[in-house]
Image (tube, rainbow, N blue to C red; front, top):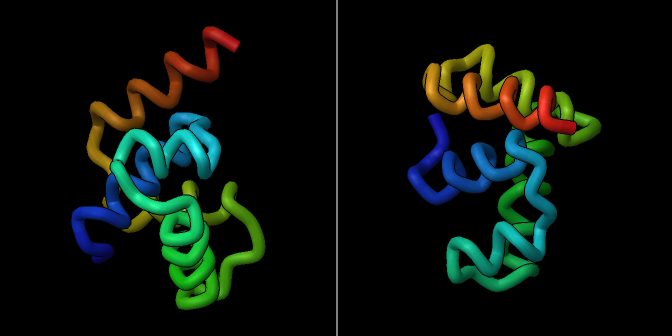
Length: 77
């Protein structure tokens, strides 16, 4: 299970946020966000962010509220 910061980063990614937006919202440096995403993807052998979101859902890193927000975001687009 990722730490609290990485969980927030993944939640924002799943919602469609870009790296800069994530960094701003979490008061982190852009490079920190990029590094955390990259290291997590490497750790799990992932090739893209879609796979990271799918893994997060599969492993339970996101709760039902996160999934509901994702569906609502996708329907709005």
